[in-house]
Image (cartoon, rainbow, N blue to C red; front, side, top):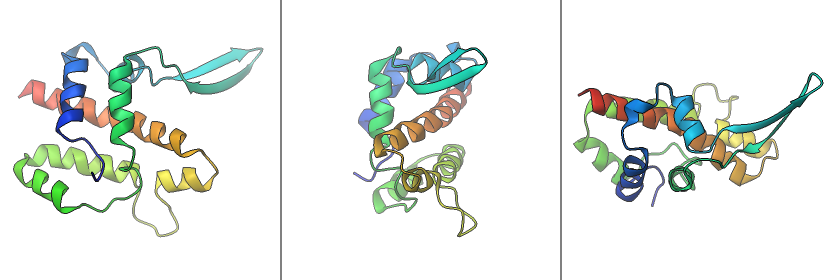
Amino acid sequence: MEGGIKNLFALTIITEIGDVKRFAHPRRLVSWAGMDIREYASGGKSNRLGITRQGNRYLRTALIEANQRGYRSAVLGKDVKARRAKSSSAYVAIADRCLQRLNKKGNRLLLPRSRRLLLAGKHPNKVKVACAREMVGFVWESLNQAAAA
């Protein structure tokens, strides 16, 4: 598997979310999935901790599993190209923006976000969760577009 969202993960995401219209903003979906950042603030100082894990564990697991290998490369394989050929251009555009967001391109000096985090000494699991949190917004957008159609 090349990474990304395939049939089983897509089915899990859709069944766990249900009606996406109940989430007015992607941040609400992130919070509902338990992928919000915990923060402890006292005396003018704030300490950011890991994710809350207080939400839907099945959705959280599916999103993180979808990023197990997908955060490493921006190269599209034959399988992904075949799936994109069958999809509408609006969904492909959303997927392209997601891919660019997770793997920022452009300047050669600017490394992809996941690579920057890894080179900064972050644990690979933290990088996967960070990429999964960013992916939630694009999942929310595509589901909202599908609900509107």
